Length: 303
Image 1 (cartoon, rainbow, N blue to C red):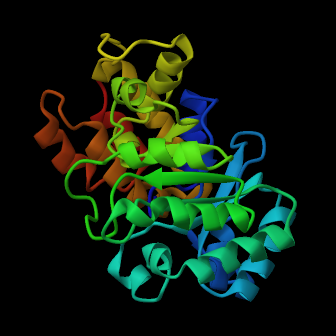
Image 2 (cartoon, rainbow, N blue to C red):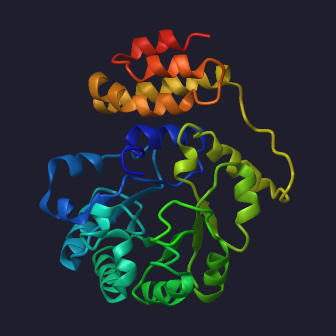
């Protein structure tokens, strides 16, 4: 997730649930091709704490995909994920993200270019379709023909954006038609959601559902590992007091990776989400969104 899944967040998630496969924020292949300083900094990862480490990229120029893929492999990433699902207006208007659903030939060419350049796996994240799910299977079959090693599908069309409920039915049908792993995404907020929705798929991808509740990744792993049946109570949530040490750890990672000023500024959105739903949240949130130093957070979270 742009602005969320930076190195600190990835390391924090892996500390909670080591089995999680983490992805970068999505990065421009054009920027990587030209060696843009900020983008190259965002490619930094801790090889001891973040593996398997996947770099998610977007773009539309096959030559830039080829050169960017080489850079990513040389940096030691374990895989490349091509974003063909982002519905943001500025992304789609540039023929990136979801726009590629309407350009299957270009989409194929991008996958082929990346696969030609590297030996690490190349996957694709996309949506059910542009305005209908009828194109999902043929579109994904073309991606697999071009060399895609896995597919992750968000259960909404481009036109739905993030409205309504994610539809997992078309993903189950897709899995029957392709011979690569298919991962489902959309509306996974609890371990129970994962148990009920995984069906015949090979895994679940969680994005927005981790925001404010990264502990859900451990709960999902434990629930799926145990093979719990849909409808069973899981009871894995923790009291806020028990989460405070983890929240402070996330802050410390942010400061370590980006310095105190920038790190704490970017942590404000996380801190606001962490206290949501707990007693006194509104008053505490109003203070946390203004913190500038790590010590301020320590004082505010004393319970």
